[in-house]
Structure formats: structure tokens, C-alpha cells
Length: 391
Image (cartoon, rainbow, N blue to C red; front, side, top):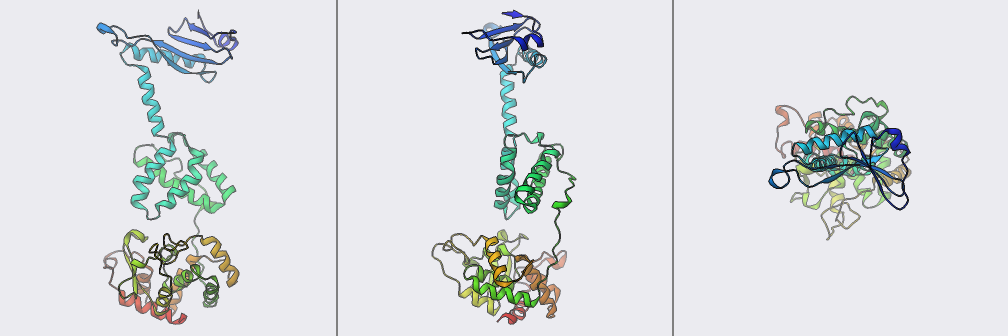
């Protein structure tokens, strides 16, 4: 059937019992409206590709679906049909072009680009890339799955952060914001986006607030005593955090094969250290006593583990809650132990430069260029002086 289609006519067309109705538009040759027996309407276009037949003639008659009505109205269907026929007249099959467009769209959806970001950027530049992968896969991919990244605008990002803040807290939202900012900046640099939708985003409630908590010696002693009640592995871990002034991840991930032959120090390989350079940490007498008393596992090298050394200790939130209960000290984090140890070492008269070496901070300029064993004696003296208070 051929008919001059109008929007009103298309809307009012009814199905025919027992058959599928097909109406061709007289104003756009090749454009057809199909109506199923159940009343569903869809557009398609019939065409022949120039030069695809025998002797350079047009090829066989082909059909390409354009989409469903009313999602695609008559005007849009005519535009799509004319564009397809124009391509066919020039010798290009519009179906091939559509496949390419769908393939490119599939390659640019969020979860695909996010996986590339993890593989090519996070793994290469982030020690804790698995945390980045877990966070994005937990909070972002389920919400933005199948969405092309160039359709993700600022409003979409704000909505996601609002939902995360309400359901999981501002801490989780803050971390998500940090990582999607890195993701979008990377996508812009790769030419996948012209601009980041979160550039200059104002979310003051998600800003990082520098912590200034320094625990008093009485508070540290209460935590030290509480650690004894915790038992292995969290008790020794907390005491080593106090004695060494190192980061939680580096103590929790301490391995037996990092211990130097005389076991009076351990070396964290660059790949496991925040500054991407190796760090040698001397063990004071009380720290060495703790390390020597740790179990020797047969299944793995991790000294602090609940899996017989296979993987490092985890579950810090629950352990911290128990530690608060035992110690009666409130309003502090495990990272505050590091800051507090450094502050009290300064109070003991240890030079700041030596404390900075103990902390493993990257030092700019000529002073920052040193081999892993330089300042070892100064670091050992600093930690022995500090450790003497806990012997």
C-alpha cells in the first residue's frame, strides 16, 4: 500500500486482524511504516546500492530498520530514509555505516572507557589501583553503564554524587568525585571528550579538610594498652604504627621477604610505596621484638594476616571501633598515629630533616636525591629514641 503519510494519519492507523500492514510513503520513496497485528509501529527503508549489482548496476533490494514510532516521528523517519538512500546512490551501504556507528557507540560507553582508564592509567600510575577499580565498579559503573561518555553532563555527575552522599555518606562521595575527576581529565587528554563535565565543580561539602589531630602521650599510651587487648593481627599492627610512624597500608602489607638479613630493618619496594621510591625503615628494639614475635606462615609472606599469610590484614573499620572502645580515646584515625609520632619525635629534639626521612616524604631539590640507605643511621637513631619510650 502507498499513501501520502501525515503525522495524524500515522497516529490513527490501526492494525489489521491476522496480518502485518505495510504502508509506503509517496513523498519519500522507499520509506515504509509497518504495523504489527498487535499494533506496534516501526519505520524501515528499502534501497538498492549503486554499483553493487552485476555489470555495475544497482544491487539487490535491501531493507534497513530505522526505529519505532512514536520514538521516531514521521519527519525524523523521512530524514533518516533520505540520508540512507543518498548513501546508497553514492555506492555506500547505509547498513554498514550504521553498524560502524553502533560499534563506535559501544566502544565509547562508560564501562568500556572506564575499563581502559583502569588498565592504561590507574595500573600504570597508582599503587592502589585496585581501590580505584573497586570504587568505580561499585558506585559509578552500575549507574552509568551503557551511557556514552559524551552524554554524561555536569547535572548527571551532581545527581550521582548526591545519591552516593545520601546512601553511603560524604566520605564515599568525596572519593568518587576524586576518581571521576581523574577519569574525565584522562578522557579529555585522550581526545574522547572535548571538556570534562566536572571541571570546576563546586561541591564544598565534599572538599578535603586537612587533619590536625595530634594525640597526646596519654592518649597514645591508652591506645598502646588497648592494642594489647586486641590480639593478633590488629594489636601488633597498631603498635608498629606507633613505633615506626609509617602509613597504615605499608605496615598492614608488611612482608617477611622485606626484612633485611639482620632483621633490624625492612625495605619497602618502590612499587609498594606511596612516593614510588623504596623506603628502608629501621626497627627499634621494641619494634623488632614485635616483628620477631609474629607468626611464621607457610602459605604466604604477609606478617599481619588472617589468611595464613596469603593476603594482608584488612577490616580496619571494625578493628578501629574495638580499639576506640578499649582505649576510650575518641575523634582520631589510624593515620593520626603517624602525625603524632612525628610531633613527639620533634619534641624529643630529633632534627626535622631526620623525621622527614623516617616518614619517607619526598624531598625536593638536591637534598631529595639520596640512595635508599643514606640517612639510615639518622633514621635508626630517631626511631630508637622514640622507641625507648615504649620499651
